Picture 1 (cartoon, helix red, strand yellow):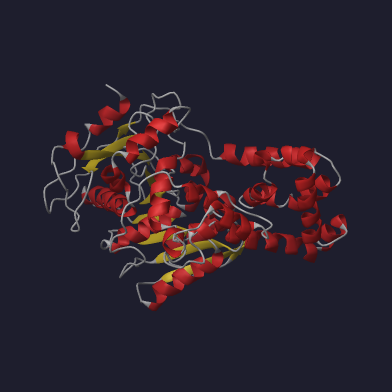
Picture 2 (cartoon, helix red, strand yellow; picture 1 turned 90 degrees about the horizontal axis):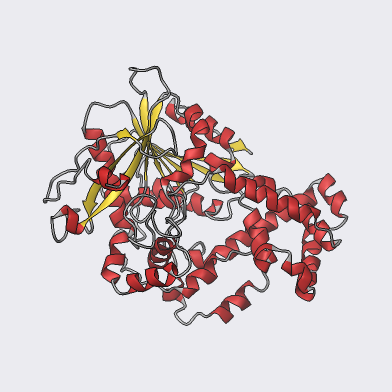
Length: 484
């Protein structure tokens, strides 16, 4: 019997109308990802109706999906009860909870004495996957698709569009609600909080639309913008990246030492390098992906790499390779710092289905939009993202938007928002707009902490600021802005 099958037998969802999830039974994990951690799981309906009840066959083996959850016990003496619990909700869509494993030291400092509960969304990690064979841990590519698995996986999903619709944001939100409520109900617990990042903030907002959660507070890291605002939908990602990139170049001009090193405005230097890259195939061949705009766009996510942009442009202009090698090493080290686990690979099918169903307004706004149109729109941008072009390709079925699309919860618990001013994924202005919308509807107390100079994912990129803000939030103290 496999590890996941053993977990499936640990807990079952009462699938009848009006019944609540049973609490999970945690036992020592069979893997070695985090020694000392405990694992469990929950069977949930494949589909829910508008009231959150199971749809279809109530036989768990026939219709249910499995959710994997890892618990990291509090770092306390044996027998001492935890001071609180923190649910960690990953981003994506498509990321598993494994993205938090290497960040445990920061989390322990920020939430001393807390235990951490880390679920894998349906479609990610060790939870039920869209492609049961191709994304299984035993497949040639493990949880990632490899070789011929791409074609067979996509073909299978396209043959079952109703199955793809079971992986919507709302079904994942109902899963999360069942997990939190089930765990909370099993005993009298100390305070419970929820932390989420990026897409995870959208998922938690959707969960709160379904009704109140038994938690004392919510932390949104890199909050998604309003869902119906076309300025920030995913088809506009290159414009968001370019705006942040121009700020980074302008910061170099404003810094005497940086400007002296370049000897000219950073943007002028970059435009010359772009022209050289187009005219010299050998230069472009050195750039990962052979796309300088995308490469510099990716550097914005990592502060240490972002700081090297002026030096990289100077080296490329002079025909040197040393800084490029240093940047590549910096990006490799940054990725490695998040760790690599069997459940780490991103679920690309889930990314495509959720993104094109709910976070890409392009098909409805410009149904005849083509790759050539995108080329023309991005021609004048200096930094770009590959995401708009990926979404343009489609290739998988979408699901219809439900009544929760574009809306916000009526009420939220005390909420802390951590947002970087140089975030190239969930822009600072978008987070401000979302906070303003929640404030105007008097949904609850929402505090925005501005993390100056920080990019996306404050927990990872600005850990000291994260620790400071979280500690004050737990203590009920007013939020304070921070600088990376």
